[in-house]
Length: 442
Image 1 (cartoon, rainbow, N blue to C red):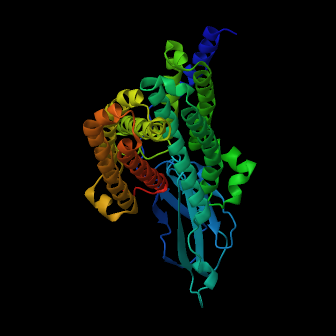
Image 2 (image 1 turned 60 degrees about the vertical axis):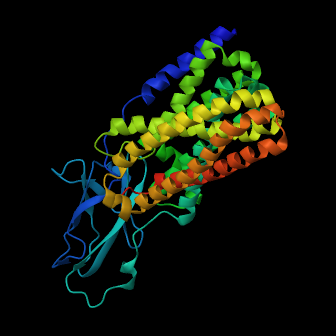
Image 3 (image 1 turned 180 degrees about the horizontal axis):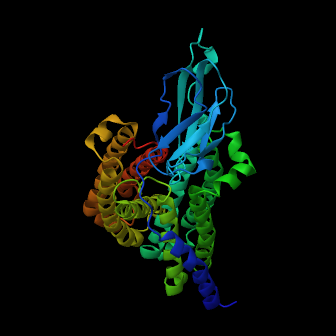
């Protein structure tokens, strides 16, 4: 099979996938939440109503709504006659007197986030309230949430290293395609990206059903999630990672010559677009009054962060250890300019996303999501200070480093600055992973 035929087949595979991924997201407002119930929570009733009506703030699928008794029995859920797609009716167990309590949960169709709560009311005149009815609303196991956050963190890091590292090698350092350190970094990023995506499918499925860590390993959990919108997005991302192996393999085999090929560049751009778009589709970017603007801002935000972080990793782990004067003279100023543009895109897109998702100063200051966003902004400010120190070194010390042919003592301050910048970036990615699983609380 000739090289031209392989490229044509790659483009044929990517074209329909990109067509699906390019679709604009639907509008949504934070996570799906309960608006009202009938009977209301805490009501005193003379007799058992037989049914409980639940109304949510957006349309829900019956399969995504689960209502359990305190004992753990699942109750039948159906559509409320004339109530629309956001209202459901729950058949209540027969009980003549006492407190009747149920726990409800619903999975957001956009991002797979699970919301839950408890509703209890009194039927007749009970002699005493049973202690078992005081059970708290169901929530996912803490270990499951931690695992999901870890998978998100690994996925974001792998995306940044792969996309940013690939761009760094192609645009600034073609020789890096033959450098063992940069090659190993790209292979590691691809491996972690694919594994994190596959793990996220099981973890997201267990998270949506308020299960535990063991549930994430069950094949049924994967099968159930893949029938939902978040599952389809994760499956599409896994497919793009598989296609990315073709692009990466061609670069590692052909080196700098392949990176200059128009056909390879089209394939690399297509894979990059697919990875960035599918990552953004599982976040909060589509939540708000202008989901299209949110999607564009999220894409720019992810692209800027990937170019900055991935390039930073290649610079720190592959370029600087070589301490070759000619490489430093060409690569470092080029990356400095690329990083400056990337940071501008990150900040601009971040402001749009904050306005889109948070929506008000009150939500920014008085919700857990707003607090995490402020924490991320603070750490990012520290990263920018380290980046400013690196940029000042480029302006004032790079010429001396070149004259001294990459002398270790001269390059060492720049290496420390880049290392500090890299460490703080990992903290930013960790906070970003927490933001994805947090409720904006608008």
